[in-house]
Length: 60
Image (cartoon, rainbow, N blue to C red; front, side):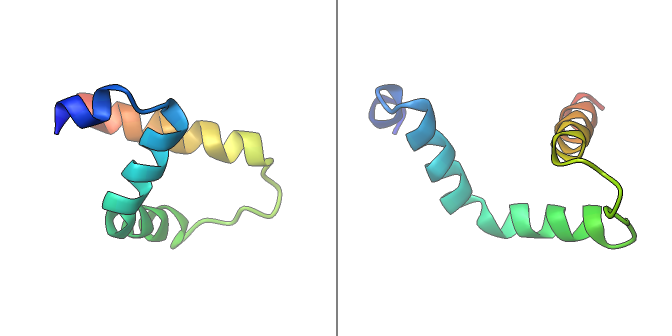
């Protein structure tokens, strides 16, 4: 499996990640947006906050 993934581009790896983990990504998005109001937020700020939250939680 590793040999098959070794030569994939970053875009291909992202697509595969989304395909394999789509249920987890949907659940994560549901949890993040359940009680959140994004009306005044910029897209860049939302992306940064999601990435920060994801990587901070993995370090715990």
